[in-house]
Length: 322
Image 1 (cartoon, helix red, strand yellow):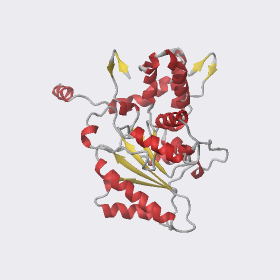
Image 2: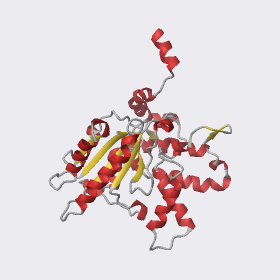
Image 3: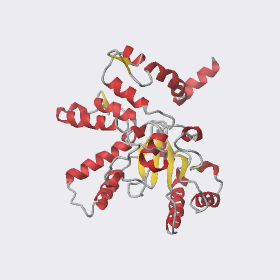
Image 4: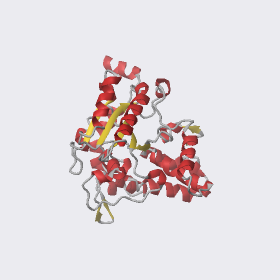
């Protein structure tokens, strides 16, 4: 994205977890997954776009129409297709919607039908969920829904373990046949815990591999919730936390874990350039829209927005003086 000829947002802010290894590992993964298919360059490019779309935050999609790519007339149809496809992916807007989409068999949804996905997007055993929700947020009430009870989920935080032994013991207890829980979610602050992340992933995968070697095992899945900060310049100094597409972890962005799918409806409505009155009153052409109004959204999200602001040190010092 650019503004007056100058880049305004880094590439890894538009594609979360993007590094110089992302595209090579993604292409290799696509080719390896299609060993028994005659896949052409066009198909590889199409699959790359699908996967990269999964790691884009909603603000990156909003900036697409102001990008250099959008200024080229020949790209108009493709840009519209990308934005339209993103707006159908409700799993970007809440943790529950994400788990419903990728692991629907754990939800008591009689009418839910899992969409057919290509070989890259088949039901993943490992999820890496990147989010801007704070690491200190209690996600227990977020996932305590009617469809998913806490008897099925085990929640862990990397920062609570004082040693590798304790971490390994807790992970292996989930992957034992006596544990009735079906999903394990590990929370990680990428700025604080990047050094422990690789080891944690290996421990989780090793425990799963030992479990799968047993007979009559129940289906279980695990995920890592990676808490990020927007436009954090210190992230490059802190260390590398990003995952390769050859690691076996399905990567997806969920802007706010506590979000709601109706937030997407409001964004779609706003993009169609409806009037501010329509958005505020959630009404359009005399029809009542079954979404949260702009007014309701501002009231619920304004305090969260102020908490996410990072004020410069000079401002904080001056405020204390006043």
